[in-house]
Image (tube, rainbow, N blue to C red):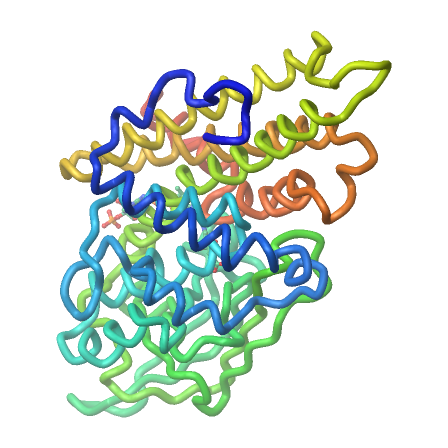
Length: 393
Ligand code: TGC
């Protein structure tokens, strides 16, 4: 962490990273400094997702970066986490694109797709030539995907029978820009996944506007009205909610890291401002109340980053469990939001402008705490884990 009179890496967490991990982190940090920071205020104000970033992120090697084969970078979980952190220091909306593309859409195809589906989609998605999205949430099925009403019914009989999709999805990131939609629907056999190419008749994706959060990203309403698909659209290995939930594990893992990027950027902005801004004849940073705020922020950022790294090491060892992801997603997003809000107070009135990042991060983090499992859902996943009793219903 830079920008401080002393090092803000008090715990010296960098010493826990390999040379290769540090190099990857620097590369993504440079990208954020050059491509995201100078433009994010206008993207946010104008509510645009910069589509041209997709191939640049592909070139950077962060799309489906934890996946191997089919043109994917094959990097470690820790490297993926570090990249998520650096991108979200730029903006949650840009990190969200990387998560939706890699952790959700590409992971679904990689884990559950046929050989033909993987060959067809993954190399160009890894390059950022094609965009994917992940359609699970519905207007009336958010925290409880098992209550989904989107259906897929057989269209004909025999091996060449296709499918007909009907229903609606909501809050689907990048759907209006997507070349392929991974759609989860109820069939006679339970929940199944389908690949729906953009432009298929009966498919409509409409951006949800206006939004007060994630403005440099696009979330959509999607409707399916008698969408006819061939048999090759089915993800053959995906059966039951376990399939989409296993993709959510990947995305939630990345969020635990990413949120610390938004927190660090907010903290650094507040620290820099506090050391430069004079009030009552001395820098704001020289007042005890400001120092307490800065220290409280830093304590949570260091703890949250250490937690994310611990998760990453577990994941790379093949030992990461869903309840551990829930603990980290819940804690790190909750604390990042508190840090961003506290950072804004140090900036005073200037903190409500787009000249400074904390309030933009705080607004974004309201979405981050809501998607991929709300605070309440992760609390109850942990509650079930420690008590053995489920309290969802
Ligand atoms: P439950 O009975 O617990 O489980 C059903 C089946 O799923 C399995 N499972 C998991 N598998 C892998 N990883 C996990 N984390 C899993 N959690 C559950 C489970 O073993 C079981 O498998 P099987 O084979 O025995 O059938 O299901 P439940 O309905 O009781 O679950 C309750 C709850 C609340 C935990 C679950 O519904 C949940 O996680 N809800 C939150 C949903 C959520 O996170 N939605 C986010 C949607 S995606 C999104 O927000 C996109 S944002 C990005 C963008 O597009 O912009």
